[in-house]
Length: 432
Image (tube, rainbow, N blue to C red):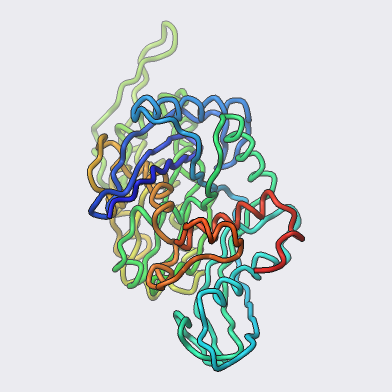
């Protein structure tokens, strides 16, 4: 059935800020109603560095989206990324009153809610709690314990934290633009929703989202997110290398990268030369395409090595039957798929955010650089944990008024829980 809700995803990136407006059609696919974008001057490496410039860019992107859709935008799903993101594994358990009664969704929610209480590093807060396998009365490797009987319910959790000040700055920018944050979502998790298929997540897959300031990584196996990480290098560092290596202006370096750049120097012609205008009354400068490719390849190899460190850290390197999916603006560099396959030994493909897309008013949204923004919209309709969608009653009861409101999908409620953590006093939330 068609979902009457209209959801807006706001991607606050290093190079661009974009807003995507969408709704679910009668076929269960996302229908993109409009797109607004603006140049991002106030964000560095995924974090807000200039409040006023970021607010101005958000205003411009939202206004463009409103003009494109003729819809007033008041509430948005916002992505968060940056080198401050940390992930860790923790173990949690609860003891039930009776082992004869079946384990319910409420028990799962209570166990998950308890993990938001764990002590984190000073100045950081939990933004996501992702369950791995469950344990019921010491019986391990249970994917979904709902319906089973047992007294002690345990689970290992993948917990993602972010800096409190970074969250506050994002909230400040969004709220000063006259908007309300519905959900705050880790950007690689949003990209996964828009780019990966269920079969890939089941088989084992690593998503690599190459943005302007950071490269985000998420590893899936058996339909469960196993590892997330953020590498503090992206497309902008390649542009800086070109600027320095070719002695050109920043905007010229960006154009060289986008129009003539490639990731494999062996594929570049020896004799091809690019002529760019010189500064005032100076002759044009000639740039060798081969040298340009060498600069790009060297930096991309470094980024790939850092990505592989994170994949190996996950412990799932040898279980990624689906290989690697590359998305984000950086995935548009020529030969990047071949370089990833050569350096990692894994199959690779370019991820376009059309996995769940239906009719689109603007086909530009299918570009990989909009994977996060599209995913932020989809995250309002879909769960980050596929197990929740299979349960008959997955209402998140951590906050009784929210559960009674009729919002029953897991992500809507556990991310709302995250938002409450950012705004409410911790001691007020003791009973679930």
